[in-house]
Amino acid sequence: MKIAKRILIMGLPGAGKTYLAKQLKQRLEQHGKTVSWLNADEVRRHYNDWDFSVDGRIRQSQRMRDLADESNTDYCIVDFVAPLVEMRNNFKADWTIWVDTIKEGRYEDTNKMFIEPEVYDFRITEQSGEKWADFICEHIVDNRRRPVFNWQQETVQMLGRWQPWHDGHRALFERAIKKTGQVVIQIRDCQGWQGTNPFAIEQVKRFIRRDLDPLYQGQYLIQVVPNITNITYGRDVGYKIEQESFDNSVTDISATKIRKELGLK
Image (cartoon, rainbow, N blue to C red; front, side, top):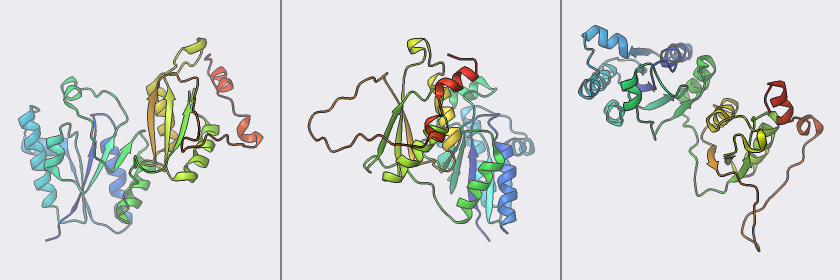
């Protein structure tokens, strides 16, 4: 009997898991793979089990694992919330896809229970199932894992307000990542500073991820830092501070102009 590779698509209710599952199933089948798909709501309906207590959710994760093992296909896609670490450990996915497109779902008990995963293969940051399905399918078929940010690897730092992140910042990022293969993007905590900078930290993060994911996922890290206005160093400290030069098509891009066009300061 064929043992399917288990693909877990997890995240809060309403994040877009089911749509992504449908799109990914189609892509894998187009590559000649046999694919089964288990939707948590359909499974609960089949077993008439609507127990959403902790015990009920744990039981559901074990049931989903058992059904996946019985699928006899190349891949089994399973989409369910899986809010608890124990549920994910029970399922033992070969690939884990975290659909992180909303901060709160429609069920308060699930919101309170949900623990963000520390281990996953892909983190979906926008509801664009077609784009992500193409990207993930290629990686799964080729058995390519996304890069993992290495804290001890040489890294380029990009410090800024990013109010908002725009094509000029993307050009700077692409030049930076060629230097070391990974970049830490630091966001100054400066919303409202000097009567401008209208975007909150979470908005800035979304702008960056929407632009860089999925292509660069795992190759950059976003950090929030204080409103840094000065960088001071003494003698040779083992790193360089460099200014990059671009042509007018990039340097003429202005976050101030973009904010003005949006009716913001």
